[in-house]
Image (tube, rainbow, N blue to C red; front, side, top):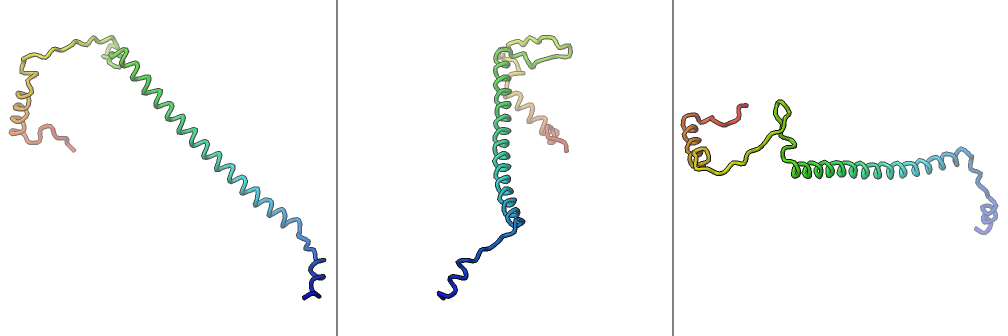
Length: 119
């Protein structure tokens, strides 16, 4: 065994340049993949943040406007302001729930399909 030691101590492997180029290109591909993964992850987080921001601003804007001006989304054909009248509860049959339910039951007895969706 001692006779073989001088043989492999002086031995030098000469690797062709093409092999080194291939190894370097594979290493740079791995680095590029990592960079693209990070870029995709950061852009996905940014897109989610933008969507959440827009939705929250829209909700905030609509709730503030509707509280300040309840007639904001109420329009008519002439696009003129609409005045809403406060309705006081009255003793009229229109506001009597028992009569409304009795009327509904009477209609359902005559026509069982009343109020059902037609497919």
